[in-house]
Image (spheres, helix red, strand yellow):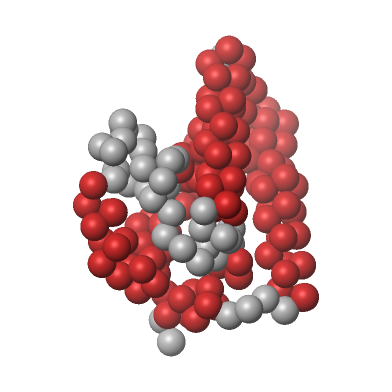
Length: 178
């Protein structure tokens, strides 16, 4: 069974208490402990010193990116919960295709938000190695979305998703046509 088919199957199942705990607890661990350690602690305090890299911090620009990222993250989570009746996690996937804002501006507002958030922190810290790691992470996330998540959404939502996909940009937000 292909990964896309498994994701579609998992997204349609009701959650057991164990999976509910995983679906809620795992993202907290990953986004607030694992990724920050991988993206900021190790690069900023270990790699930059080891490689003798200069700091090129821009706290104001980094701060603006952080705020933009947090805004899109919270807006996306709210839309997924209220409109889609779900979350970004496949174990608790949305039950309805969400095409309203922020999804009317970009098909991937969560990715847009998380990439801005993490790059903003790196820029505020001025860690070159952190920026490189986040660039690699962002590329991998976008490849996953393009090659797996979009195929899963096509299977789950069919023609509705394909029509939405034609009029809405992949990542960089643009003014809504509606």
